Amino acid sequence: MFALPRLVALALLTVYLVWGSTYFAIHVALTSFPPFMLMGTRFLAAGSLLFIFLKWRGKTNPTTKQWRDAGLVGSLILGGGMGLTSYAQQYISSGLTAVFIACSPFVLTLCVGMYGEWPNRREWMGILIGFAGALLLASGGDFSAKPIGIVALLGAIICWDLGSVLSQRKFSLAPGAMGFASEMLLGGVFLVVLGYLNGEHFVGTITPSAWFAWSYLVVAGSLGAFTAYMYLIATVPPALASSYSYVNPVIAVTLGVMFAGEKIGTRDIVAMTVILSSVLLITTARNRATKITK
Image (cartoon, rainbow, N blue to C red; front, side):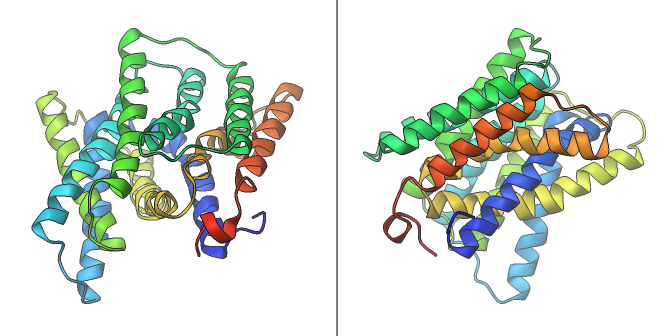
């Protein structure tokens, strides 16, 4: 992908493709799962599977400090970011959700800027063009929302981006995949407790489609894409790591056309072209020999 190192390109493609499809999976799973419990059990399952696998491979446990930091990062990224997003989707339309998520690179850039690292001019152009493309792509959809949904989604974006930055510049997680496992485990616990305190409970039988969607979120969305995202945050410039927020709606639209018989118009094609142009700008904004490592 534009001469990126192979592992970086693979991580980007994983985040783009998988997270582009998880919006639909979350929508399906929410028919049987309450929002915080959905996200909590998802990450508890993924974190447990990864932790067991790593222990089987002989990896050492995180230290007390690393467990503490994993809990803080997990509470921000997963508890605040994923939990509030799932909660907000009950009260805000998908079109408006896409626009708000497209603000994430701005927030992440500001958070990183607090540590003295600001985007260059080409990255700023890519961020602005990507946001314009996401706005154009969502402009044909429904923009209805309740105030609680807007507040929850704003909180989700701030928690996600702040947690992403602090995980690399402030807190010390266990090295490699063990850090991801401990973060998902404690973030999952936080979400389950939050759901319990919010009065959530399961009503009726969980449908097969909801079970399948939940399983997809565990395996592809958490074990695959979330791990890839954490790798990107530690490896590439923030503008590139957060470019998924522009590309995911493109993937969602494409999947809708391919598998749900949805129609695509001239505006959609123009918007997707603009978004892909922004990704090209961001990808080529820095010298990969000095800014992106293998």
